[in-house]
Length: 274
Length: 317
Image (cartoon, rainbow over all chains, first blue to last red; front, side):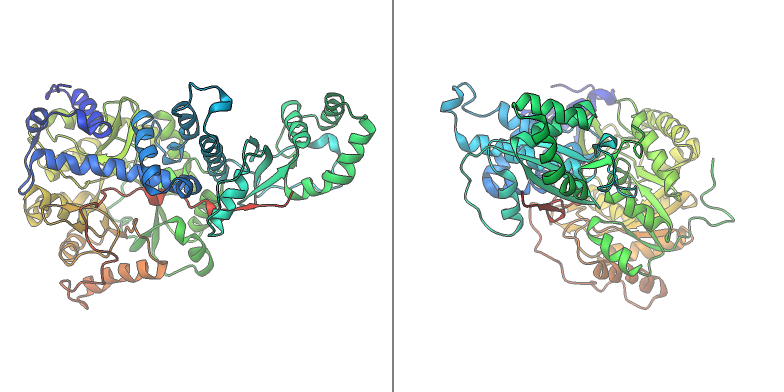
């Protein structure tokens, strides 16, 4: 790529591409743009920026995906991170968005993506799920939450309950929450066998919690999120699952209502102005 | 435009520390004897979680200034109005003494390098940056404070030196200046120029803040790593800059291998000792945390990424 030295926009386009793809920069353009340093050539001066660019952002991805880093090891993680950063350079003023597309990129760039699902490598499925979980945790850490506002208690009417704002409903092919927290505990877990898992991730009092739930609970809470009508969701999930509605109401009242309210699954509609 | 210096001497905030996530609990628990804090704008402006709640509490007890790394005032991409609106809301919320960023660009074509990239310093760039500073100040409702970055290249198209560029930029736009003494040393070494000449040309009447930090000397060049104590040579420049800026607010940045708050605070206190002449500036303050290497990374930003793992628990089903 040539540079019109009289145009700042041309210079900046060239330099940003020189950071993202350093191999594509020709020495003549570098020499025409920069003076040599007292002890370094112009190319070596530019290389300080090029080297720092990738090391800096790779380190940020390591911080945002610590369990993925653990699972892949430093060398393989660096390979993935470098490819990702080349394909998906940061498009935001905040580093918090740096890893936003990482799980999707892993899925889209898996080497076996053209194979039928049953012939694909299972460890890649695991890595995609683990990265998705880490991204959800990262997002919820600093998302708008309910701290500083009143929480409902067991006396709150069912009709007033809606899901709290800092909550994600997630489904994975592997028990990635277990793996993540094994790594957090300083252990070196083996890659787990495939096992469909459902969970609620939420933040309360600035602490992020993961609650494993059943598939039926996951679908019920998804209905609550979609309809913002808890009693109607009880009726709907009973119909969908083919259970007597009375049995589902009993399950709600006697098995999950109290622990879910106390865990912070719900807030009162009136408190959040909904 | 607001006077940040002058009779009220609003720039004499004393000695402050860059607010880092690792130190939140210590600061809230002990309320350490620090004159003020500088918070990285981008770490708080979108926060709906603990970081912003902590900053609000700290701002109840300490003066706070905001320091940005993504304004990209020198970019040819349009200014990000949403970013500036969010920054303004945060500055209002914490009664920021001022809002600073760097004389640099961070990206183009919608890509953010998260680096503080250098500009060719000439009349065309001055016109370009001046117009954007005026626009940013209008949108922020307050003057900007701009910092000299560390640089590793020199453009053939540059016709102005950095002090002259900043002097004119400040005169035209009314912006104020943050003089990073470590960056002066780093940039001058890398350019083969004399840091004393740089300071002799710098418009100190526009300086409201000074930065201090450590760097890594790689033999052929110096990298601004912020991961170690301030060097003896930088302390010498600081003494001069502090006097010439009439005691501008002084802040220590420590962003890589961030030690315990007490260690950072002890390093900050060396600034007081050096001003008082109690400690010879040529003595190294502390051992380096790790050997120098060719892998020195400029503009460390990993400290901007909060440590999430320790903040997560998995509950029984």
